[in-house]
Image (spheres, rainbow, N blue to C red):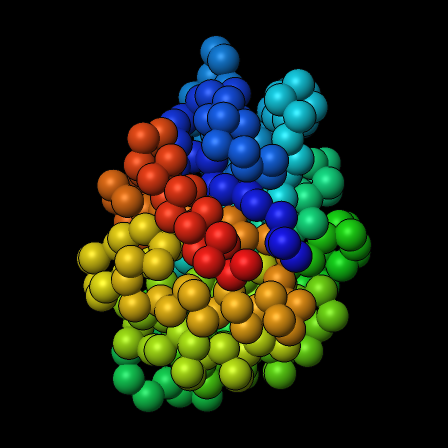
Length: 278
């Protein structure tokens, strides 16, 4: 298999050590960190982690024998009309976490934009923000690649705007985390439409599936066309990680919830897809 397996651990439970325990039980050796809770503390988003938090996260990873495959920040999940400064501070915290945890990837989004035809000024502001994000990461975490995730209601919802981001920003450390389920929700065929146009920009994949808006299912049971996508990606050597983000209990705008039992169902669904490739 050309890919490493990973998972967003906060969909399992709040406590970070317990997230790692379940991932280990499921044979997933990497974790993408979005939210965490450590003993004696409250739940935090990864960009809020203090130096002490990061030391403890790193120690927990080492103790469990897992590595950090990604920092899943909330950056860019805010309306484009809002000032950029607070979000850029969130990005600074995310960069610090990615650097400390030796994360190969740092996930961001492309800002909520108004529906309909967009004024050029809004498109230009999206690009300006992503350029600043890529530049800061290149300076402070040069071994980390920033990945933009496609999602509904953001600038990077459909294929044309996603292509626009990567061709316009044109930064070597800015790539894509390809979420086929999110394309389904946006009314885009992930394999026929998104894959040919975007495959050269893909760093890795978020694994979930959908029948339509609000109808999230295990991978392979929806309209994301995972069998075709995985076969094509394998044959063309595209993507480093397959990262579970099941959303089987809750698919919120800022996070998802699955729980350990449904997370196991999501992993077994991915196992079946991978076995079918052989």
